[in-house]
Amino acid sequence: MSLVENGAPGADALLDEVYGARPPAPRVGITGPPGAGKSTLVAEMALLLRRQGRRLGVIAVDPTSPYTGGAILGDRVRMSELSTDPGVFIRSMATRGSLGGLAARTEELCELLSAWGSDLTLIETVGVGQSELDVAQAADTTVVVLTPESGDAIQSLKAGLMEIADIFVVNKADHAGADQLAAGIRSALGLRAPAAWRPPIVKTIATERQGIEELNEAIEKHRAHLGDPGVSEGLRREKIRARLKNAVRERLLEGAWERKGLGALLDRAADQVLHGTISPYRAARDLIERMTDHGERSPN
Amino acid sequence: MAGKIRVLVAKAGLDGHDRGAKVVASAMRDAGFEVIYTGLHQTPEMIVQAAIQEDVDAVALSILSGAHMTLFPRVLALMREKGIGDVLLTGGGIIPKEDMASLKQAGVGQLFGPGTPTTAIIDYIRGASE
Image 1 (cartoon, each protein chain N blue to C red):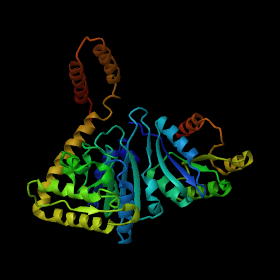
Image 2 (image 1 turned 90 degrees about the vertical axis):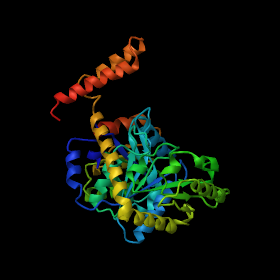
Image 3 (image 1 turned 120 degrees about the vertical axis):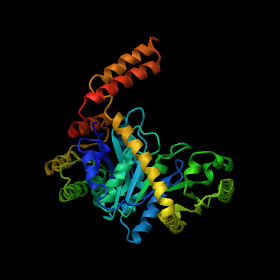
Image 4 (image 1 turned 60 degrees about the vertical axis):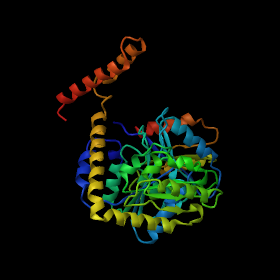
């Protein structure tokens, strides 16, 4: 997993080998603002699924510091009860500069978890705002977790987070304002064009294990909906297409700055922009030119 | 692309004092490490399973309860049994010098007492991971 996460030599070969070795485990993404209770919810969902005998992969993403490159990955704190269960594989990932709420190699690690034998993989994103939406691409089912503290109903009309939900969770449902939040979401959904899937709203109190069963049932229903051949083919093709674009972009940029001379060129270009000799856009075009030149000469 | 240094920071055993562990974890983050923080009351089994799944370079235990002579050897034995005997086991707490020496004899890495600058711990782990 570390090989793949680090993009080390041999990582792609390993991924090629495991791809398709087992049917891919469905992926459920859990996203929402910081402090919404994502980790606790994931832990409770996982405990319940384990009692039903499912093997589980869990990927928990926390942010990398943009200043030091370090990270504290603390999602395991809430998952203590799972931590000696051989039927659960929990992996913490740091975003390492990725801005979409997931780590760059999250999907690759999901594939490894499928190969390990996961029946279902839960992906917990970093605490998100309104626009870190990579999870919708990575997951088959996206669960958006909100709390009465998440903001008033007007927020729920906004684009982004609210649009990617296949299921809404109103967590901390014992707090004041939970009913208003649910009503706000419902009315926002009412303004949408009718669609084949209408996101249900599930109320939970994760710390008291309330509503977890309903949530897992809602996920099952969504999976059944996806299983409908009319729905799945087009949607899956669309996701694969986006996935390929991402993989190409990652592999193009991977190690680009470390390649011979480019780091120095970047320094020189930064100096030139600093002193007003050239515009940053001109500098960027020059750098891209050098990058692609290099790519053509290199055998891989 | 070089990997990051990944360290598991755990509070083993029953004492509930996690301030030291949090200070060390924060310092490690600031040094560019990826710190997997598991929180309080971790059993040796929990620690070793987390170390395997997270593929860490080092396991750092904070033990303030006096149970270090039981917990470190137990964790080390489990790590060896599960095939990660090559991963550094280090840590700190209120541990007498003689105990540190005898644990080192047994194969535990360097241990750090109260008042150790966090940079000493970081340099040690960085040195051992390279």
